Length: 190
Image (cartoon, rainbow, N blue to C red; front, side):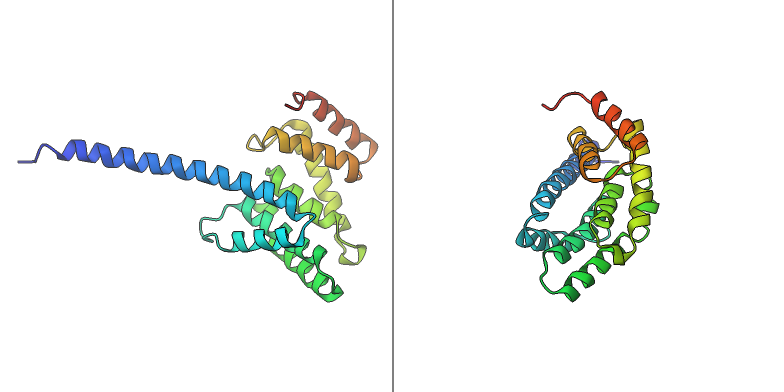
């Protein structure tokens, strides 16, 4: 004979597990929003870049999402950008590029991951030989942004990426037309 409390206890355990899963999803979304905001600061601040590197390095690796890995790769390049010694700049840039290895290919429809690699490659001096990679990424980004791909990308980021590429990404005239149409199709800034 089974005790009567088993069914309610089982239901409570399932509900508690579901609540924890929802909380984890919410935490992940909040964490990603925090990383995005802190990354924007890291572009202009060496201390913010180092702090965000420490934060991301402290995250559990098996659970780390590809987009966080891409931010970590791009941060390595920013640490190099903020360094003073040429060898240190070079070493961090190479490490950042190595961290991108296979990441975009494993997530080909992620605009965010590809944009992080594109901006990293675009910002490197010519002797790194990343111009062709940046050009290839730009072509794919134009296609993804023009077709509205990657529904996980927040609208404000999509708008920001479109504007950045138009202002600093060096699109050719046809790419520029496609990007301008995609930007015009978005609702106005809130």
